[in-house]
Image 1 (cartoon, rainbow, N blue to C red):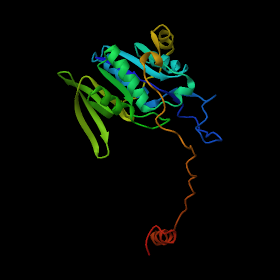
Image 2 (image 1 turned 120 degrees about the vertical axis):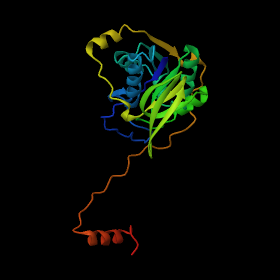
Image 3 (image 1 turned 60 degrees about the vertical axis):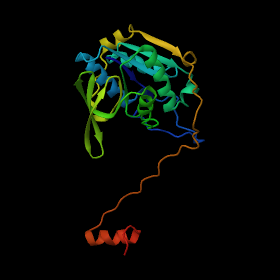
Image 4 (image 1 turned 45 degrees about the vertical axis):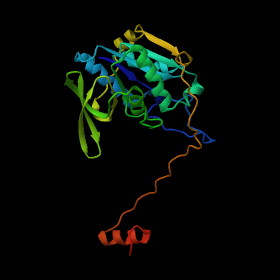
Length: 255
């Protein structure tokens, strides 16, 4: 099984986001970036499947500006065999949508003949959670979303346990398929110094988006980006009666 893993360069999860004065977006210049955490989990699962001899090759993919090569090198250091960087300008990268990413992945899958695509369930910058299901629809492949466990299902199938509101849902999907990784699927490994050095010699293929013939014109427009409302401080009450009285006073409970 040949697995393609999507990895996205995002503002690091530990960075405090700052809104631009014109409210058109967030500051990204001079800000620490890293691989999307859910994509790290997807990559780790693909590498584990290769270690279990259930996969033959793991290829990392990213659609983005020049600095996306950094996360691809990180993916190579974490166990990917090869990397594919579909290149756009920084200006274009900031306007990419899930549909553009899915269309690009579709092209790569069809050209390189992959058997599975692993993605994080969402990116922590736009929180769309749309790329995996859109890609499955474009390819007409079965999908296993929000995976928390992946096992060999036998006879060309994989058994995937999914986290849902009511508990756990176990599905059996036929290869080829699309998977999105949830938080509890695994704990990603760290890239060791020897592997970081080895990653520099692994192949990284650059493909300009124009070569794929994909239209990346924005389909939506961001009208305004604002900070969430400041949470008001809580208070203490002496007993249940005081709590009920306070709720009535605030209008949360009818008198």
